[in-house]
Amino acid sequence: MKNLKSFDVIENPRDIRKKLGLNQQEFWSQIGVTQSGGSRYESGRSMPKAVRELLRLVHVEHVNLAKVSGDDIDIAQLLKAKEPELYKALKKEVKANKAH
Image 1 (spheres, rainbow, N blue to C red):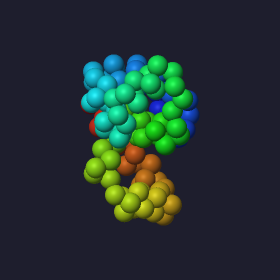
Image 2: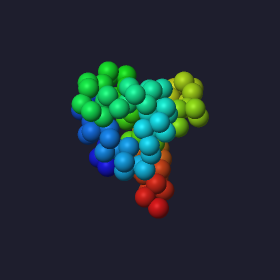
Image 3: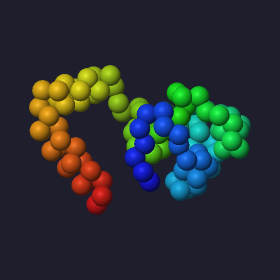
Image 4: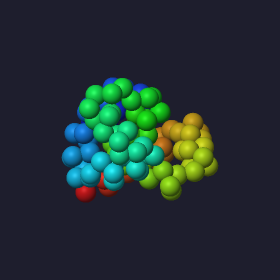
């Protein structure tokens, strides 16, 4: 699946859900949306930007929001700013590990 930038138009959420093998309840509850609300989005109703971003983070980027804190984001931003080469190397290593 392609990498998406924040708030980009995403493919049909139904397609993402089916690729992940989840039912509507499992898929939508992970981002705080009811099954009925998710069903409406899958039927073409416009999604708010916040819901699209949560969907991208959780179901496309596979970020476990329960394990991420503000400190984690701050550390990543600091590392990227102060040690850009190390940041790039670590990012490359993470992507390589995900491919295996």
